[in-house]
Length: 87
Image (cartoon, rainbow, N blue to C red; front, side, top):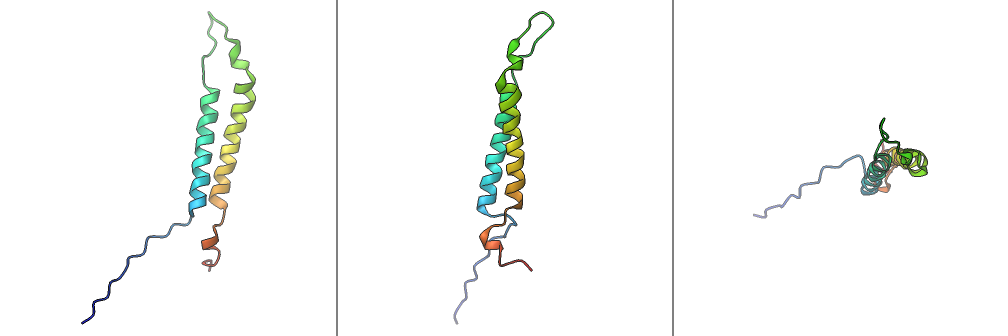
C-alpha cells in the first residue's frame, strides 16, 4: 500500500507580507512622532522655551499623521496574490 502524505496548508490571512511591512513602518513612525513631542515641560518656577520648538510643533505631528495615513494604506492595499481570489 502506498501512503499519501498530506501537507497542511498554512492559514491564509487577508493581508500579505507587504501589508505587514507597511503597518510596522507606520507604527514606528507614530511612536517616533510621539517620542519627539514628549519632553520637559514648563513649570510655574521655570520657563522652558523648548516647548515651542519647530520639532515639537511641526515635525512630530506630521510624523504621526504620516504614520496614521500609512496605517490606512497598509490595510487597504491589495496584494497581488489576493487579486484573483476575490469572489
